[in-house]
Amino acid sequence: DQQVKQNSPSLSVQEGRISILNCDYTNSMFDYFLWYKKYPAEGPTFLISISSIKDKNEDGRFTVFLNKSAKHLSLHIVPSQPGDSAVYFCAASALTSYDKVIFGPGTSLSVIP
Amino acid sequence: EAQVTQNPRYLITVTGKKLTVTCSQNMNHEYMSWYRQDPGLGLRQIYYSMNVEVTDKGDVPEGYKVSRKEKRNFPLILESPSPNQTSLYFCASKTGAEAFFGQGTRLTVV
Image (cartoon, rainbow over all chains, first blue to last red):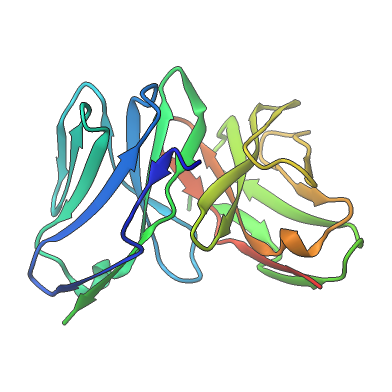
């Protein structure tokens, strides 16, 4: 049973609009969440993270929101750019055991010019 | 330049023929890990290492071995590869929560 779920395998968004990628988790021990971005033929690269003591973290065009009660987080990209087209992985860990990181299956984002 | 280097990038092998995928990092990270990526399953952790001579199983360790004799290297060993180990493999290292990944090794076992 997947502990980190990304229920949308793909998403298409017009350039300049907002992209919203969703992630749900089941393990209440998770208290640190990360988003990674992956281009074809490359390894994932870290994008943004959030600790469970916060409900929002912003870095430029990227904002992650965390709703602990719903065990849900989302990544907002505003405005979306064609270079944002990639696969986005949500990941979760417990700070007490950060060596174990659980990844979701990924969402493929296409930003249409 | 800070990087994680995996070799080879692509490998086709036959069932049962032992192989090693190498991984090296130049960031002096204590923690290193191996993942496999399969469609619909995301990245699943195979093994990880907290430091030299310290390794532990991840979520899918069956059929794999690792060793950590020096800090910078963390090879992944498949003693007797099988077709269900056909996958895209990533090595990663980190010092905090955010990991640095290699470019991946696409392995096909026929």
